[in-house]
Length: 424
Ligand code: S3P
Image (cartoon, rainbow, N blue to C red):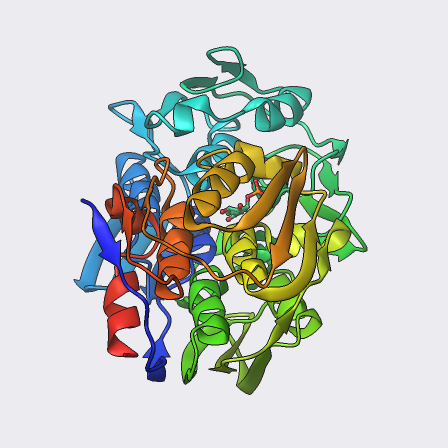
């Protein structure tokens, strides 16, 4: 489905409720499936990725029933059963990487596969630590499909070169069923939702600096209310800052400090985003954001900030085209391993809009403020975040832009365009 986006001149105004966090929705299904009892999960993501996780756990014998569009009841004995079929992870790297940690220690064999984009993504990062724990996994040269032969696992102390929440979560979930203790150390702290949710459901887990340690634990179900996704809110934050005459409120945004790098960048750029009404919901920080059009200035995004905003970088690049000065984004080489090579894709497509953006091995150099001319046809590379970033660029372009295959948005945020329109 192609989409044409036009410039907005009257500004974005009003209030939206940001839909459910993708990372938390995945984990709510996975971790509740490993817990004994009945859990009500509220505000579950409507995105296709989280539905891949949900269907996969149904195939592993977990009873899951929707009570309304976004609210479900999950019943589990805490034990999974052998699947009758191979398990489909769709487009979702989070599903494949986290579930491989869960399946490696089961007493049955299983196969994980995914779509064209997921089948090209690196899985060595999870196969390596799991193998050190005693897992037996066959792969297609360290890519999907993964054939996992369930084994008794043993705990390890793993020092990861990558600051990746997917790798960390995979190892911690494997550690839940391994003998002894498992610890994971990362160069910078990545999102810690797995740790918080495991603790919430009773796991023996502790954190010291960038090392997390888990011991074999039994989990007990608890109700989980999933907050809104700051990675989805990021597109609206960017739009609000760069579309003239905007002033609106984004409600129910997850504000876990391991995810709020985008707010640090907004502050460095001089953007006006105010946090209102902060509270704790299901062990996670949540609040509302007020966003106003702002004069932005360039900044540098690097180091420990990167894992705290990894999914927001494509839209930060769009913001940087509208900021005065040269923005440098570096240390983000893992962006090349996402749903697309997001460094090369962002540069190729934003240049079509007329942006002054250069590719580096681990990021971008972007010079602004540059008026985007639009009048172009851009591609989405099977990548939901590329599709939404291009849409935001289109909102400030002189002439309309055509976005090819816009339906990739449905992977995380089917409500995206409806919410943009509601603010006009
Ligand atoms: C995620 C972690 C990040 C992020 C992805 C979701 C998660 O990946 O890009 O969209 O839910 O754990 P990495 O851990 O590979 O950086």
